[in-house]
Image: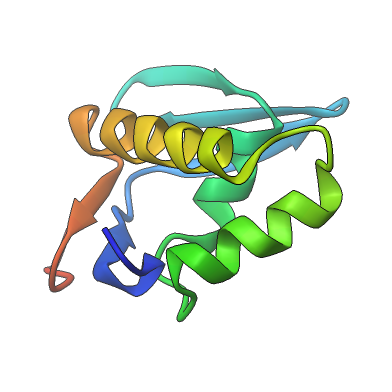
Length: 94
C-alpha cells in the first residue's frame, strides 16, 4: 500500500472512544485498538500517502522510528483487512 486512499472502511464497522480507549466493533465482534490502531483507522480512505502519514506520526511519537511506524501500519492494515473491517481497492456497497 502506498496511499490510504487505496483502502476503504466497511460500513458495518465503527470505532468509538470510551474513557480514553478505542474500540473497533462490527459483525458481532469488538476489538481494543491501541493509539496507532486508532490513528490508522482514522486515515483509511483519506488522500494521504504512507510517507506523509509516517512523517506526521513520527512528529507525535518521536521515540519511534519511521521503519517501526511502517511496520505497525502494515500490521494494522493486514489485521483490518483480515477481519473484514477494511477493503482494498474500489469501495463497493458494503
